[in-house]
Image 1 (tube, rainbow, N blue to C red):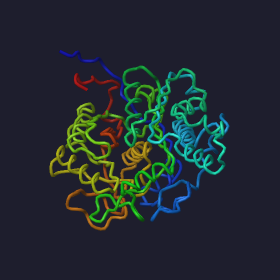
Image 2 (tube, rainbow, N blue to C red):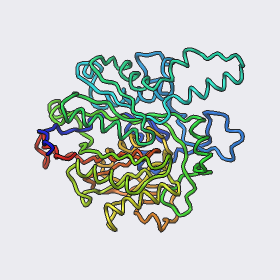
Image 3 (cartoon, one colour):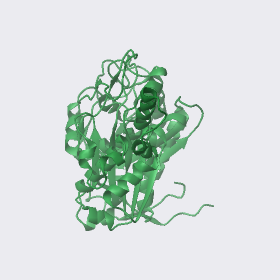
Image 4 (cartoon, helix red, strand yellow):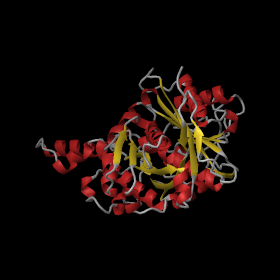
Length: 423
């Protein structure tokens, strides 16, 4: 018989940082979500000659290096700069200073799909062009995955810190947030900066292009005529702490993290598995202490590919039956930001819970009968939301589902709750 763990701390989000193709910073990002803004444009990160189409969701109106205060910009690749910048934003958004976070035992967990593959692209291109076989040592030092989380810790001057990079592909953002939830709820850390980051690179675009999953113009999840995804980039970082800590310092609370669920089926390198997705959803509900009927909104993985959307909706129906919550995909606006995708979606869920609206699934014309969900087509709607479920699904069958709830001090007075025996 497994022992039941004792009381665990409740975990809340008190700061958020976001860099995306539809806006940098929480307020601008929220405006973009409400407006149904599209970040699609021609890719400029690499030479797209030879590709029949090359639309993506790049960030070209914000330089993450502008947010760096400690490290020289050339010490970090673009993905690490995104993560460090978003973390600085999250700290400031939480009403904290560098000294405040330096005084706490902290966890930094950053999810990614590609790491600094953009730098690898440039190194290979330079070798081919120069023919010398030498790599720029400054750039070569930046490609190690550990740089993503360690770069955040160094930029903020954190010493009493555990820095972890989570490479579970397109579900990595949710995995990292789950790690932060575990650390705070168990009392192992006092604060967590968790999320995901990735930068557009030739390697990933080419891989998805060869899989015939890149859309020619727009991403239209759940639409009968969907043609695929668009690659994106950016970073979303949540600053999390215990509810007790947040209340003690009078912090603004965006949402409460109720729990998460993981599954890994490893049945196929790229094909999603319905039963495994459903298992991760049920695991998330179990740990969060909710039932399917409590969920008001699903932020789907929703890539806009034929296989993902149909399989994901089938898994949702398996759990929820015919009475499915409204199910949206912000990838229709920001593209697929790989390891940052579910982290950016978690930011969107927290904003939606706090501000009372559901972001739209844009570019929608006709719902696919195989995807019979209310995807809130094209225009945001006002909604009284209590619980949001955020999906992150990845190659290799790595699935992570996060559950967030609106914090309401009137009906949530307790500071601790018992962990279920089987979570």
